Image (cartoon, rainbow, N blue to C red; front, side, top):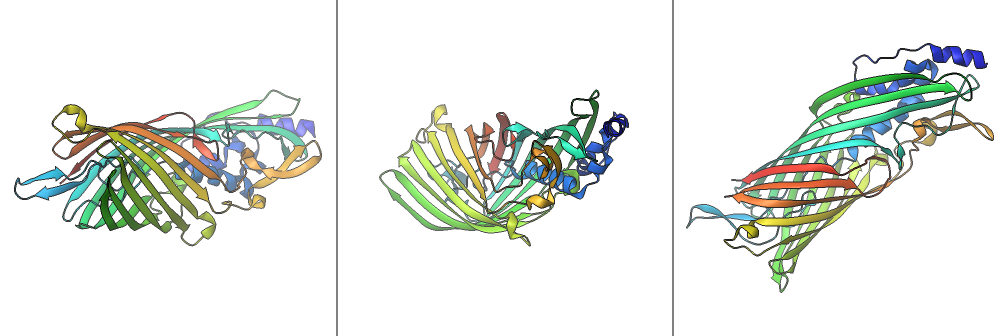
Length: 392
């Protein structure tokens, strides 16, 4: 049996050819002589889940709100800021854009994904059982995403906005694959590199402001809305989830220290279209710190900090659909391939940045994004963010 397993491992193609990301990831075991694993539907299912989660957990969509609230002043024939509230980078705020105004923005992010539940992505901690032989299998995975999101918001009325966010994503995937019979033979290794670039999943939003008032801490605004995530990205290229989402949300913004400190809350539900198993709830909290409006340059600068959260309603897959034979101390058992268990997860992230009012209604934002917990397929380090927007 050992000789058979070693012979399988010697059948190796060491260099990957170009191909679709999902196909390359699904068939990685074949590169180290494990075709029965590569073409096992359960292995391929879990490879699909990893690619799907790698993209789903990225902040593809900036807030639909403009950085500042503008209104047209016919007396000066120009746009003017009407309050000191500053929009967070990703969390929605209660204020709307204003009738007839158009906000256009471009947000850039760079994300390196190589973690799964705090462990190296693609490393199976338990040997596979291949024809009864224990095979130590690794497919160390680096997923590098570059995201450019075009964001368009139009004020249908003073209290009603519509928005569409269009992310263009490039994905570079690097695999370091190895497999060997436990305590026998030199490990067989291979590498695979593939890339893709195109449209990812789009987001369409509508927001209605139903309350606007003020108190000693500053303005207070509340809104409700609906957002729809469209499956426009190609999942076979690692650029889309392959399913849509729809659900309501609410947003609330208020001043804490008038002219200096504001807070924002938003929360909503994203129901999986056609598959409620893929549903989740999202929620967030943000603070922005700034000086009151004035002629000095520092009144054009604001600091923003936000916490983003998402809770899945259920596991994306049944364990039996992604698990295959592994060799454990107690014998052979079906465990998730690639060491990634398809359980329900809760995600927590942070984003922070500086927003600078450059001139007229143009705003530059620079910041960073980081995962706060190790749940699921995640970015590992601080990821840089940059955005430019204008209101017309």
